[in-house]
Image (tube, rainbow, N blue to C red; front, side, top):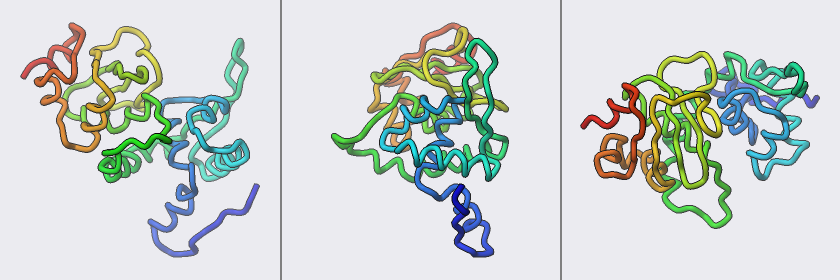
Length: 210
């Protein structure tokens, strides 16, 4: 394992960057906020990262107390990586960083990769204060789900919601990006028909209420 690189500054921001300032580290956190992931899954959803760099970052993150590695029970019997409590505490950091960077998404480049679940964290921020429950989100690129309210576990996940969601949101990628940039609110998007809300649970009914 390579020695830790450090700014050698007695400053909390510098110490934080010692741990998470390397390229790919925060994006690995973004992926693991969805819950335990296999190495192959991480590599698939981090296009552009080499296998050597990903392995090195995961070792560094485990050393720094951000992640753990464990073996799943049979029949899977594969190793997965997951965030520790300290790693999960980076959620507001990623959300703040995403909010700062949202205006840079105005133009999508031809070389840009995209995964549906990359919109989960900015959408989660847009839904704050609108209720609690499990929300399934359907975009052009695929589906993901988010958990509104206090949770000690994953705040989002790839694919359909496990079990019956409290609400389903149908919207296009452009609307989701605009929500992330702050140029549109969820309530306004629902009112204008840019988000279709499905479901009969209290959360879905509340979202449809003007």
